[in-house]
Length: 212
Image 1 (spheres, helix red, strand yellow):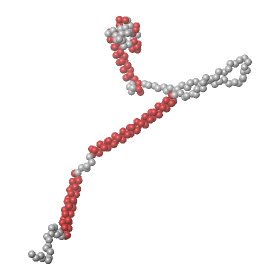
Image 2 (cartoon, rainbow, N blue to C red; image 1 turned 90 degrees about the horizontal axis):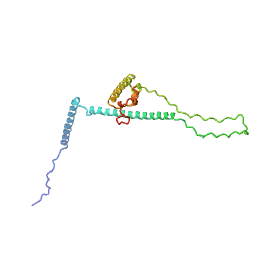
Image 3 (cartoon, rainbow, N blue to C red; image 1 turned 120 degrees about the horizontal axis):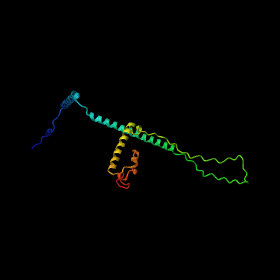
Image 4 (cartoon, one colour; image 1 turned 135 degrees about the vertical axis):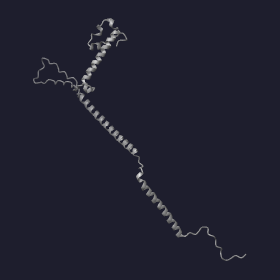
């Protein structure tokens, strides 16, 4: 079998592509992608009137309230610290004013020698200085009344006192009927005679456990 001198042509495994055809396909694909993007943007613009922002208004309001509460708490803590500091300063000043000044202790004065008839008397001799009296602190007088102390008027105090006195009188009456002893001091303030002057049959002895 004779071999030909010209080599045989090998079949192509891959199709031969034209550069112009590839460019055309890329251009078409790019146009499709660009048109799709434009349609999406147009739809977003059309629906923008009905969209709600991602930030929740309730969450923003709660965050603002938490920040406000935090600031108020910090301000209160600062004011409390200032008040405590001022109170301590006022208290220390009041204590320092109430404490008497410390006096240097010099001891008792030396006794002067007894004068004898032979001792000459020196004219113009000065006597020993008398010790200064003990410095007492100055106390501040404070007037306390019901209006300022408890916030109620004098008429309310009077009405409450009358009601209390009436209730104590009723208690004393039934205590004597039940052969119970009524407190002596209370009976004195109610304007009755002393309990110890009452006849023995109207009360119990003083050492009885029911006595109040």
